[in-house]
Image (tube, rainbow, N blue to C red; front, top):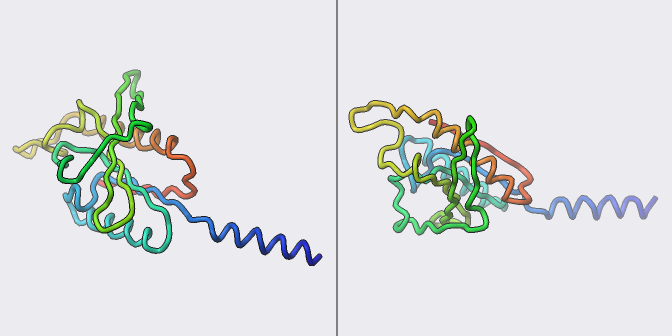
Length: 163
């Protein structure tokens, strides 16, 4: 009986010492893209979880207004090359990464030449919504889920998509 109790105790200690991993998925996050207050909330939530000892990653679209040079984005070759299939059409995604300033956590950016490069996000300068917003949203969501498959070892998945 004593051995069983010790084994149970050692098992629980090992479980507690394993870092929990969280992936946040959002369409905006400060300082990269700040359309609404949600961007700052995402930043603070990710930093707070990271500071509490969890291993945190974030995924967001690499919209054309996000400056790659200023934010030091670079391609993650092992994750890039994902093809997302929507209604029989394939859309290639390139995955880029940057470190969140003043925090030790990575933010992944999903990029597609045709749908995320434009300098406007959801509407043009005349406030007319882009006709392909639904397709872009589906592309981002499916791309994020495909990326999750390639990020081995995520124990907890916390998905936040707003917009």
